[in-house]
Image 1 (cartoon, one colour):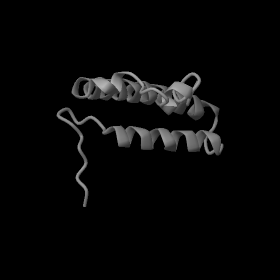
Image 2 (cartoon, rainbow, N blue to C red):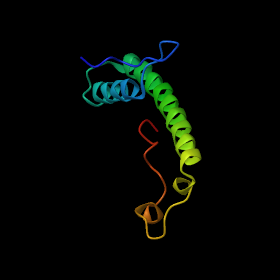
Image 3 (tube, rainbow, N blue to C red):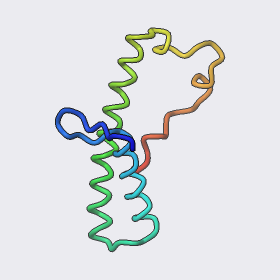
Length: 92
């Protein structure tokens, strides 16, 4: 059985946060809940998305310290060809 890494203060892992975001999106999209609950879930989703973004940004910065080449896209890399990053628009 895989042990969950909940951190020093009982924080949920990034995987747990993403899983909860997926649950919330599914509940709202499937119409499983009423308006008030949808609003509450939306607010929870916004908070989770913000936390995920913070953690991913911190992880990216750590990786850039370890490998400075990660800070800038390589010539001809797919990152250069991508338009604006729409991945953060999950709940926008």
